[in-house]
Image (cartoon, rainbow, N blue to C red):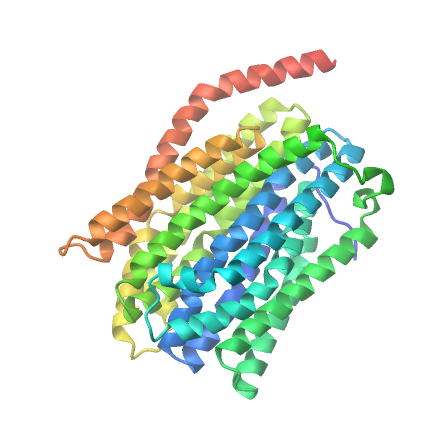
Amino acid sequence: MSTPHLNLTEGGITGTLLRFTLPMMAGALLQQCYNIADTLIVGQFIGPAALAAVGSAYTLMVFLCSILLGLSLGSSTVFSQQYGRGDLPALRHSTYVAFVLILAITLVLNLVAFLALDPILRFLQVPAEVYPLMRDYLWIIFWGILFTFIYNFYAALLRAVGDSVTPLWFLSLSVVLNIGLDLFFILLLHWGIQGAAAATVIAQGAAALGIALYTHLKRPELRIRRRDLYFDRATLKEITAFSTLTCVQQSVMNLGILLVQGLVNSFGTVVMAAFAAAVKIDSFAYMPVQEFGNAFSTFVAQNFGACKRQRIRRGMRQALLITCLFSLAVSLLIFIFAEPLMLIFVKPDEQEILRIGAQYLRIEGAFYALIGILFLLYGYYRSMRMPGMSVILTVLSLGTRVALAYVLASLPAVGVTGIWWSIPIGWFIADLVGFIYYQISSPRLYRAMATAIGSSQ
């Protein structure tokens, strides 16, 4: 396998960004297939209760994985900046420090997940008929948390140095394995929901071990040497600061979604099943702009390390245009094809599930441009050494969503529809604040970068 990578500090901005982003988009969509395959096969061959269980489990797993993803994304910002200024020894040392730090957190998180499984399910108000299925599914899924960390860490490292293709290859092989094992365990061995969970864990393990081995063997410049195996206060502080704040941003975002899931569960199995199916479609629909935001973050970080302020400014304008155009096209497709998309996961005779799911998609799907812009703002502030601002925007977005969801859903005339409308309202408020702060802070940041350029010459 070759070693494809892009230098994001050179070349045309739009073309370079798109070439870097497309493999990330494809990878993110494939990653959704882990749970999508479970949901599709479970919904069609086991039934609505199992569909509701897998759907609610997905929301919980997204929250747990967001902690690990946030830690990896935060570390990758440091990696990108060091790569942008050509400091490979610092990059290797930071990789070692970040790996040990996040591994320790992963092991603690895994233990807590097992010990707190029943309290978590009670907190989520899981209905009695769904509870045992969801518990069985999660007990097996939790064994794959370590694999999730390993894959996401090495994927973030490779992307930080401009290689977004290699993670896609390993993820593609893993998804094919996951779907094959789903069919084998559920249809042939009749393992039920436990089979779906086992297929996911095995496939995640294959992706994790494959990408770790590839990085060690094929990327010698990233291979950690004996002299890199030490801890120093400055590196630990830098990695901890970026990783912690990005982790908080990611986990707060998904904690809000988890709180909304608890509210959805209180409306019963039908609404749970509709939400479970619609969220899968929703995740596919806006995942490309989320990955574009992550790619934009790497672009900004590398150019920040290289002190190319004008390139960052031009990149923001072009990224906004791409995001808005793509989001509007996806919104139109979701609005038109809401019911046919729901039929992928739900049987035609489940009319109430279809109606509620299509309603969710049409309300939220009309505003994908807002979440696309918010992902760009997250990436920008994280890479400009202001990850705290990403946390603030996340709290604004999710705080508004959760508060409005609970208030509106309690009104008899609004009901569950209020949960759907609270989501784009939260996005809009966060976008507004993010752009106002961008206008205020950008001149100061660019002046500081210009000063750094001058002092280095």
